[in-house]
Image (cartoon, rainbow, N blue to C red; front, top):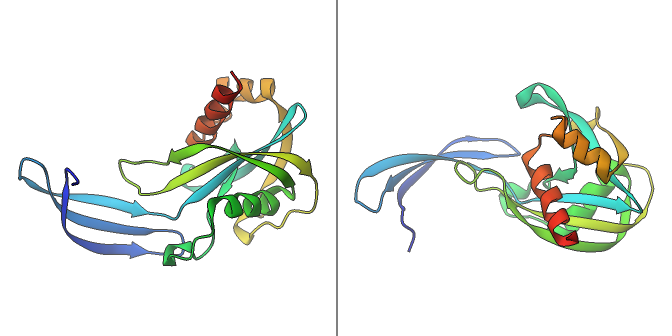
Length: 181
């Protein structure tokens, strides 16, 4: 049984990428309240590794008004309607779309919760190896994106310098490092 009971729910906003809802709740002590939730589909994050280098993408992130380096990641269009691809399939699709890379080997690094205090979105982080290069297939929203290879040392320095600040990228990098210890 959930410690917080949902009494009612109403959708307050919807677009192709998210649903915002407000739930009337009852806490364990019986008091009533509301909870705002952002529902987003499952995402996949990919750390592409080839020899001693890792592929990252850089793009403008409108909500924070900054360009940011991060690992390949994304959701499937239209997946809010319940037609979500399997996470591994989504990971391969995102890698191909954003970088043009294809991988022959995939390893699950772990599951990540984006912002569990306000969002239902969860994702899977993958390590992709056996890399071959090809042409990217970016979506219209990704037209300003570009990608580059970095060494582990360069990525560590970018994190220390505050150049890489994406929470999912940081968490996936930690998952990878813990597996390599």
